[in-house]
Length: 77
Image (cartoon, rainbow, N blue to C red; front, side):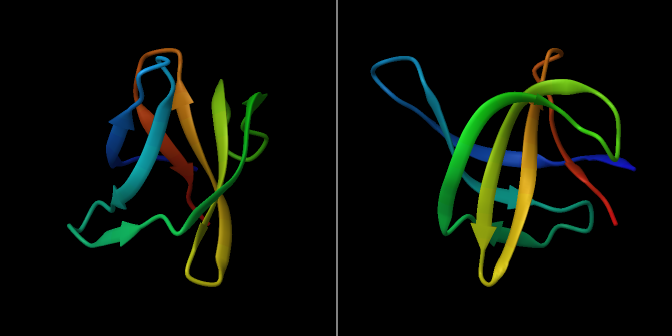
């Protein structure tokens, strides 16, 4: 299931975007510890396509998507 989230981002001088943290639906905020990969990809679980960020939050590795509607989403389990 696709879950839209608020994302704090850094816009870099070269035009790239670096997500810094995610705010979940209930207001909890999670700092992104590391970005492991960035590529154009489809969400196989939730549907949709966009820029897929493979991120690490604590011990968890997950995907964060920036879709063609300029919205951020994660695949909810």
